[in-house]
Amino acid sequence: MDILFYSAQTYDVSYFNQATGDRRHRCRFLDTPLNEDSTALIKEETAICIFVNDKADAGVIRLLKEKGIRLIALRCAGFNNVDLKAAAAAGIKVVRVPAYSPHAVAEHAVALLLGLNRKIYKSYNRVRDGNFTLNGLEGFDLFGKTIGVVGTGNIGAVFCRIMLGFGCKVYAHDIYDQPELVKAGVEYTSLTTVFEKADVISLHCPLMESTRHIVNAHTIASMKRGVVLINTSRGGLVDTKAVVEALKNGHIGALGIDVYEQEEHLFFQNFSGSIIQDDVLSRLTTFPNVLVTAHQGFFTKEALTQIAEVTLRNIESFEKGEVLLNEVK
Ligand code: NAI
Image (cartoon, rainbow, N blue to C red; front, side, top):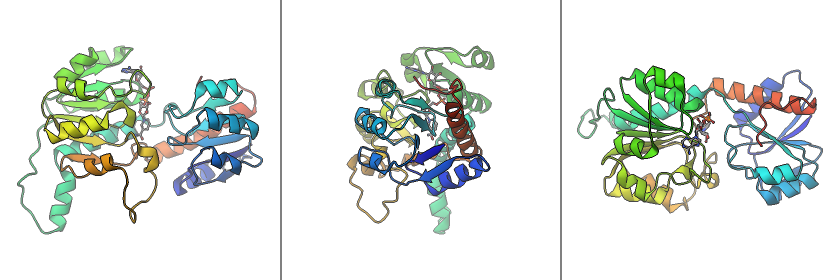
């Protein structure tokens, strides 16, 4: 099949070429993101392959249909960037990679938590500068602390188990309880209770209208003073301006994010020689207790290999007219 890749980075080219191997696909890789203008770059392709910040809204989908695209293959789990109604109306199928190494993202959430708590980013710089003092590097034991997890699907479940392994008390909120997690020691409760009781809150639910800004000025006020907030899910779950205020007044004790509300204008690109125009992100990076990574939770060898394999299998199923196991409707 002829496939056009948008927002392709060098690692995408490398992992997809490796996975393609002897398969008879013709892949064309563009580093350009998908938008109305870039649909003009489609030639013979009947499938496009896109990533988290490629926008397939109704306008783009209309143009994709005109270009003869019949399949949108997401090489990620989230699908909030695709207008599914518009795709269905245009007769364009949408497939995704629902689960690829949930460990990659869960472990990154733990890395953010540990990095922040033990101030690894500060000690790294200090020691390199010949400064071996400890003032200001004090953390706290995770053992015995209460962790609040919102969303216990593939990633949230792994995160819960890691935290149980640290000797934490884990409260979780989801629309479905997972009996296996309950058996392991997780206690399901309301979102309100999770927010009220947790010393550390980690978000692992998808971004939908019902979950947009679940962390906002009102819910932050219900959290413990000094709470640590970790978000590796989607930026839109958090009202970033409210979080900035809470960091300024100390209500939020530390923030670790791998995702950001306005990330599509910044992440996966190099602006190191430019002036960053996003004042909210710029403010965030001035706090000594904020750790921002640029959507790298998924970025492990295991996950990249699986993403490429499952994406190509999704495309092959479509080509053969098989039932699409990973279709998003
Ligand atoms: P999943 O679909 O396995 O789990 C999501 C869970 O959230 C489900 O158990 C679902 O019932 C629950 N949920 C839905 N609505 C909820 C609500 N209102 N309140 C609480 N829970 C709710 O998804 P998975 O694979 O665990 O991924 C979670 C999120 O992580 C994805 O939606 C995606 O946005 C993000 N992600 C981030 C990556 C990164 O690199 N930082 C990579 C992959 C995913």
